Length: 165
Image (cartoon, rainbow, N blue to C red; front, side, top):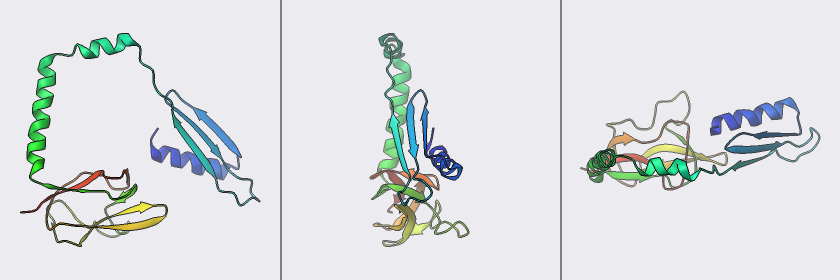
């Protein structure tokens, strides 16, 4: 269950007038409580990830994976990191929702291939109903955008790759 499904579930529960809903699935447990219509208490959502226990026998075949497959994966990862090492990574300074545009009807701040200068706004991250402009700390050219529009981002998560040359 992803964040969008949880958000739509919260909206549905709030509109239905139910005071509490509990949902338990294999890997997640959600409790949504809403205040009564006359109350000024905000709705509360509790999301718990239930750890998935694996049987020891399931881990044994994974440990016996062919060495050739592991080497191939390591080689492709090292090639990718060598390519990306010449670029500067712009990371998220906060937790929130990443937006490439200032508003839905406007064009994105930057595209792949855009030339940027220090202080240019690259994106907006919404955190607690506040929209924070994320400005570039470097000048260069956008090589890759690493996050999809309207996606949740974590602190220090890579957002853009910039070629400083």
